[in-house]
Image 1 (cartoon, rainbow, N blue to C red):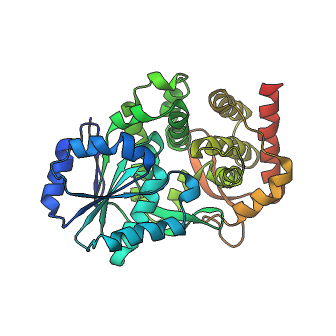
Image 2 (cartoon, rainbow, N blue to C red):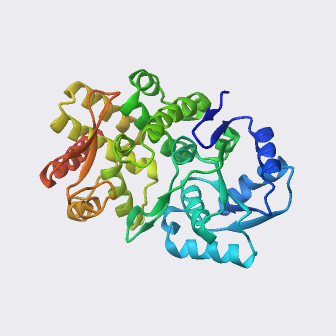
Length: 358
């Protein structure tokens, strides 16, 4: 499989171990630190250690889950680095999903004003999304990724065998980002994507590679999200708010499940405000509901969701900012929707869920 080369780092895909060992031997690092959670420590760390020529590791373990992507967890990581006498010539390896990659990269970039780090994404979500683009950070006051920095890793290593450790639900969550990339930038890929119904039988490398190419084009053109890169937030303005709400309930949603809700709502906004055709609105809605089902969003939390959306980092001049598709395969950034339109989009989603469950 072909690797992907960006301006200042490379993404190595599939058979990564030779490249990985070359990388650490050339780096002459004082220490290697690996950040894991309880899942990646059990299922992924043994593979990393088995295939690494370097065996002197400092392991830092944090609890898994979005609810732990906080400043208090960062303090635990920084304290562990300090206690282990990690200096600025060390390397941090972030072995995990999006939470590990975002938070580990953020901690590495701020510890002693920055140490090198690499991403070893172990979930489909992280491999197609969080592994590229240099966005790092944590959640704060229930607002996702509201504290952070832009900082690229020294390299990314995508080993698809890690996907065998995932549940069907985790695979489905990651697939939402592949769907998003096709909807905003690649009509032909959308045609291939929407033919998939059995995720466990999918050749993921083909889709990971094409999805990364979409994101590569966008982030190289706009690395600091001044314009076009906002396209990658399609589905995320509503989706992040929904994810934050459900995180406080007894039935939290995975990231991709919330983004699927967000994509349905924002596809409706694309229809209402960007003239996306009724046919394409129905096409996107039908596929996402078929794949993800539907969890109703309680109407009594609409105001809370609007409050969370109002704090979204993409917003400017106190207006809620969206990226809308029209037609499928193209995207328009910096589109404003008022409160009533957003409520209509949530009502549309709930009505579609009701139609498939009645």
